[in-house]
Length: 124
Image (cartoon, rainbow, N blue to C red):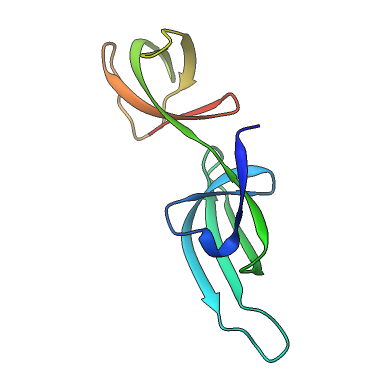
């Protein structure tokens, strides 16, 4: 599995974190000061990279969390069929089929950027 451990205090907005065994992108990060009987706490708000679901996490800042290593790759659209596009990776020349996001308009020969994590792919 492509992931590593980090302390919560090392996270920041725009980075990735694993929540409920899903890779998520952080859109809000805040910390509360240490209290009389405890350490500082961090609240992390994130959205699933592949399922777009909101998730939140509240942990002490020195707690360890898993951070996914998501690869950003380049591809070229080979063909478009309905809601699916056949993409060729520009490094390995591997071809695969991906669902086209609703807000994207892809045409054959277009070059795209996509995210990949453990067999899941998403057009950026």
